[in-house]
Image (cartoon, rainbow, N blue to C red; front, side, top):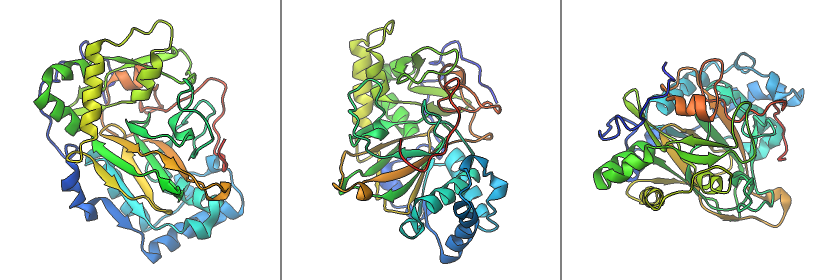
Length: 360
C-alpha cells in the first residue's frame, strides 16, 4: 500500500474514472435491494445475544473486541457489506435494530460490536470520543471551533476522517434531518466533463481548519486536495465548512475567485438530484459510508422540546487495514496513520480514548 505524496496530485486528473464507485442516484435508487437489508428476527436475536452480556455487565466498550462479540451468521453478511463499502459503491443501509426496546446501553453495545466486525474505532474529536453522539448540543455552527454534528444546522456534502463512518439512529427529529449520499467519483467525472479547468483547481490543496483539535506535530490547518486520483481510483475528501473556517486562521492563504468558483460548482453538482441519492433514516437504522468514495449530507432539523425525544444518532469512525490505497495527503498530512497506515481520525496528545454513553 503506497502512502507517499505525489509530486503533483494533478498528474492523473484529466482521465475519466469508471468502476463501481461511479454511480448516479436514480440508478442506485432502483437497485435498493443491493445496498440495503432489513435484519431478520434470527439475526436480531444473534446480535442481541452478543450485546446483552456487555450491556448487563456495564463493560467499557473500549475493552470489547471483535472476538468478544461473536456473530456466527451475521459476520458473513457483514463481510460482504464491508467489501461493498471499500471496493464497491461505498454505502449501505441496515434496517430494524430494536433500539427503543434495547435502550441506549444495549444499542451502543450492539452498534459497537457490529462495528468491530467492519474495522477498528478511531477518535472522532479532540475529546477522544470513539463512540460519537450526533445530536444538537446547542452550539452555534458559525463558531470557528463548532463541529456540525453538535448542531441542528444543515450539513452540506462532506467526508469524515476515517475509512468508514457508521451512524445508528436512536431517535429522529420532529422534522428535517434527512440523509443523502453522492459519489465523489461521479462528481469528479462530471467536473471533468463540464468544467475541466476547475478540476485542476480541485486537485490542488485547500487549507482546512482542524477546529482547534490539533494532533501531535500538526498545524492548526492542513492542506488537502478535494480530488486525489490514486492507484486507479479517485480518493475524495471534502469539508467546505472546514475550508471556509480555515480562512480565519493566521497564515492561511486567501481563497481566490477561481477556487471559490470551483467549490461552488462542486456543491451545485452534489445538490443535483440526477447525481445524489436521498434515503430515509428511521430509529434502528445503521447507515455505513466509505469516506474515500462518498460525500454525505443532512438537512437542517427541528427538535422536539423534550430532551428525551430529541434527534440522536450514535457514530463510529472505523479504520480498515485492507481499505483502498490512499495518497499521503490523507495519511501523512491530514489525519495521521494507524499502525497499519490507515487514517486514524483526530488524535490529540494526552487525550485518552473514551466510549461515553452520553453526549458531551
